[in-house]
View 1 (cartoon, helix red, strand yellow):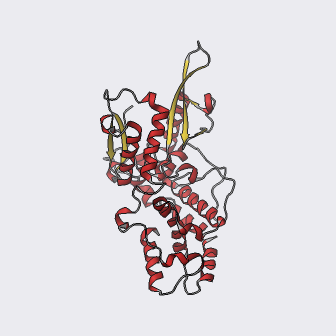
View 2 (view 1 turned 30 degrees about the vertical axis):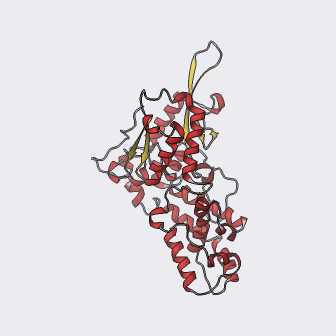
View 3 (view 1 turned 60 degrees about the vertical axis):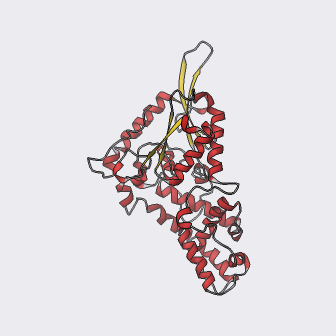
Length: 360
């Protein structure tokens, strides 16, 4: 529904000239948290205890504390950072860089912006915007997640609507409006630090909302995300790209798909754990030796939001890490299984079939 739908709902409430009571009484005087939603919505927030600017800067400081020995000497050679061509992503990268390198970060690092353009093909940070087969596939493409979301929403939003209408018989709220109220709880909390929209719903309602978010990402970008599942392993920027990468690595996979007629309580697939605000996936390369005189071996482990996550069938190294050579082999094999990005996405021959801007 987005902010436009929420503004339409608020307008409808005011034009009804009826005072709301009960859980929605506060909405009689509630004002949207920005005067310019067209430009401010879905951008990096700069106010409140959960501001995106604060999260990005703090993350940079944390990583400087943890990985300062890897940064090298400042001024010798700039470290390259890549960000997709989205205002909030670019702003996030800048605040992150200030935390990692200091306020004069531009002397130590270079931010390279990769456009979110369809004609980049596979040479992109955002394959969700370039894979035309995924975008156009009406059965298992981008819209698959939205359809599965609607199926699950129908199991609980109607009951919430009945409760709200019982308190306010003159107002009927459809499923889309009620779901947008739940989304508004998160958006407003991020900006203002709290939101009265959160109190409209019960704990059971929020467990349903959590699962609804899991469903849409699972069927849009996750293990059952159709052609998106066939994208390359990549550096990610938006949450959908992070989820695609995680699912390609077979992490957090359940033995069954997510049902849409009930909550699968015992599940590994939880987007709140994978892509919270400021979510991050870090690939750590370790060099270890079995004893003081032994030969050194290289390993890789995956750190997702400050937690080490085992790579399936590859966790025999120190700290549940994966032998680097084995990891590289498995990634190469995965690429062969999934096929050529350009071919799978139905792209023309003149478009790139691989990433060229990243050099290691």
